[in-house]
Length: 311
Image (cartoon, rainbow, N blue to C red; front, side, top):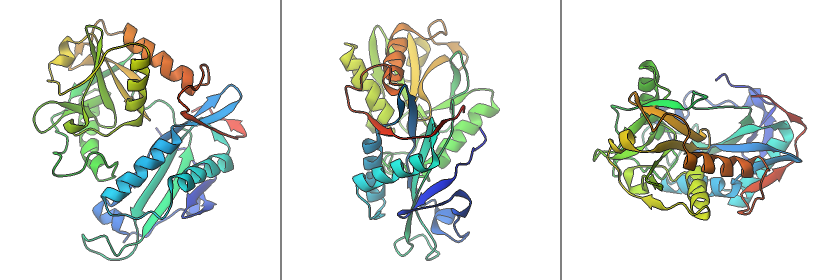
């Protein structure tokens, strides 16, 4: 999907023009992947717009930076205010928000500590992420997720997504919408940019954090909704073949939202349609983010915007 520009980007405490948000080719991040980032959605509401789980996203950004010894110099509240500022300044909704912190121009060498930390926040219109209006046809990737003692999966770091790129490119080249990676022990992990859920016998299963998955905020939201709806929830390691014999399966993520899987390795998941439990969770999620149900978990941060954009 082509990137649609907006007017302003937040940089280290001030709004600058989109076209001025540039970095030097010798910045540390370009050579060594030293970045952490977030993805957040702002949804259209009947009486305005609202950002989904803003505080939790900003806390995860700070945690990611802490893991990589990257001092941001901003609190959760300051970063949250910055997100609101850039969304309201650009006046575009619905939109995707990309906060990113990285090591900039300083020294050349693997050690990042003498390269300054730069923080940017951009937002732009962005629609459906995983292709397939009738469900996604996915495959098991030949690429494994990173072992837990190689790269920290709990940090949403740019370098981790080189692994994700391999998974996604392989899937698309082979005619699939997305790939699912196994962990280094051969158990199901996650998609290139999505957490994975499976439903079997009325129980909702998902891979635990120990299986090299990101602690997804949409993942957490679905777990909260499932428990509230009385759906049994189990977090456990799962073998690959469970995807072939489950009743339903779906992805979650800020970009993917709640996307049901039609097939895995050309084997239909159930009858290929969105199953009843996935449908229930899909509806519960979108009713809240679209303002059609009460925000009983305080997940939404209202923002003032001027126009609605069709992504």
